[in-house]
Image (cartoon, rainbow, N blue to C red):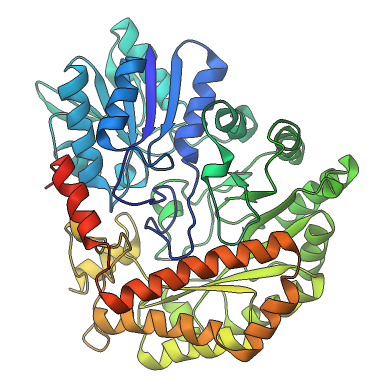
Amino acid sequence: MRVLLINSPFKVKISKDSRWPEYTKSGTLYYPFWLAYATAVIMERGKHKPLLVDAIAKKMSFDDSIKKAKKFNPDLVVIETSTPTAYSDVKFAELVKEELGRDVYTALSGTLASSKPFELIKMSDSIDFVIRGEYDYTIDELATVLEKGDDISKVLGLTYRNKKGIFNTPPRPLVTNLDDIPFVSKAYKKFLNVFDYRYALARYPMLQTWTSRGCPARCNFCQYPQSFTMHLFRMRSPKNVVDEMEYIIENLPAVKEIFFEDDTFTINQNRVMEICKEIKERGLHKSGVVWSCNVRVQTKYETLKAMKDAGCRIVIVGYESGNDQVLSNIRKGATVKEARRFTLDAKRAGLRIFGCFMIGLSGDTRDSIMDTLKLAKDMNPDMAFFQQAVPFPGTEFYEWAKMNGYLVTEDWSQWLDSNGRLRCLVSYPWLKAEEIDKLRDKLMLEFYTNPKHIAQTIVKNLHPLEASRVAVYAFEYLKYLVKRKISPDGVVKQDFENFVGNNNIS
């Protein structure tokens, strides 16, 4: 079969695979890595012909995408979706059926597909399948079953419809031996352009891959471990990880930085030490290609120092809050004291730090939010991201907000403002959504205009690669602030309306 795997068009450059899918304030655009992993499996098995298309990265319209699909003439079209893009993605599936014929199968995949499969498939009879959970092998197996005319119920991790109704097949077991999955970078090389993707914290161009899946932490807001990668921590072997690094360096020479997108790279610190040792033994730390990863504040100094020596450039850490009670409320499993200790250790190791903070978390107040700002300014990470807490479907935070009447809307079409950014979707009697929205921008401005931070930024970013990176994300954020000032709901409202009107999205 011919299988089209498509990151379908949207009105703005949104990263559907991001933990915060929106048009970012810093110009970031993620790779469609889940579609790419499934593409790599199809490529390796060789039974079907895949085509991976990132319509968002290429700024393709619905018409452009349909023309591309017609030229490929697929039998199965798999469309990545997310909560904010669901209505648009379903509309695209309907257009596929209209333009390519009703005998072309359509499927939706992604985090929302895993959390709300019945709701998605009921949105349109043009949706034949919803693929639940990690789907590296699901698409290849589905294509084989469809080609042979076998029983669909044999394919695990599917929600499907027939004349009798809508049904779930049993869940697909999590992949435990991640070394069996082909390198996602092989699919990138064949189908994507690394220059289309950017991460504000990383040198450009960068590349994203995963060395592990799952996170045993129980943060109530975190979408991936609750609905997709789950809480079972699974690891690629150090050799397999470094094999892919070597493949990237040799076959994608433009790449300047590799970002390990793992939920938490440092869960098993002994394994991290082994990866660092393997990198150094092969001399990859001298290649000029650096790497970065997500960590927790419990990461030890010895681990951080080994990472730095092996070429790690920056670590992304979820501080979340500067208030211990809020950290307890969200079951972060971390304290303010640990956050301060980690920051000192990471700086001592010579690593840059990207600190993630959230406001509007369970039990957050104006005072606790000011605690968060104070902590951020005191620790002074190299970069910081202040974002409103988002109650994604499938998370405990979503159920808690819904049960208590704090959820602003259950209508996914209302999740983004007209500028393509996530709205504040929780509102408390003591802290309204509008105030959270204003506080978010206030915290960003106060942090980045802090003289101590300005001085640190200048001193640490004299290298041309760093200076250009800072210039890009600063320019993008300034554009965001200007748009917010002109129109609180986004200056590109007309662009949004044009997209909706042109593509008949309700």
